[in-house]
Length: 235
Ligand code: CA
Image (cartoon, rainbow, N blue to C red; front, top):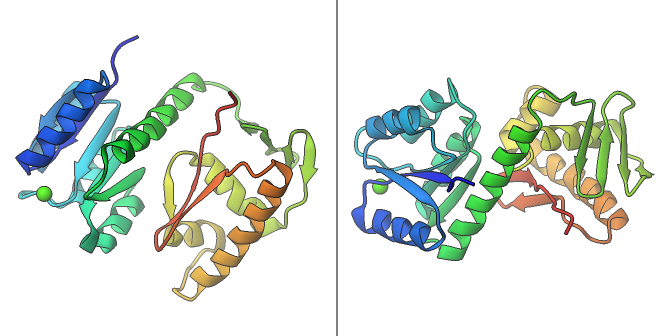
């Protein structure tokens, strides 16, 4: 199999060197870009499997870069930002980024995020052209036409809103969805106060799923940001 190709977009040489060195030890291939314009060019020409995108670049706003890439590709984009840039992180996710890393991050964190992103690419790739009237993840199955959810073939009873939430997360497995995005998709027009009711719905939904799956965590909480459905591998 070909080595996964990672595009590192980072204007800080020290950080870029650290990431490159880490990727080399793990047998990833990589390309580097230090500007937004360079990033868009490399994304077009080398078609990386994952883009690691620093949000603080000299020439272009990170959200702009994401929008450009998203206009022609669904490739996973992991944004990298400083802790003080929480707002940027949320805008980046809303623009279509998959995930985020906060500086300083550990090598293990970086590799874990890359694995999640690559799993999404492989899974999406395998399913191209398939009918998607059902969704399967670990022991969970959603039958979209019947509107039913099962874990290990036992039906889980969800309220209509819980079901909508679950379907939205399922359709975006591997991606971090922001509170705002979820509220917009499920309730239409969100207001800030809705975040607390979203939290309540998500808590009961998670409880129902985890109670029936011996504690398997399908839904990951990102404090202050949103939620993500994880791809569960049965091994
Ligand atoms: Ca930077």
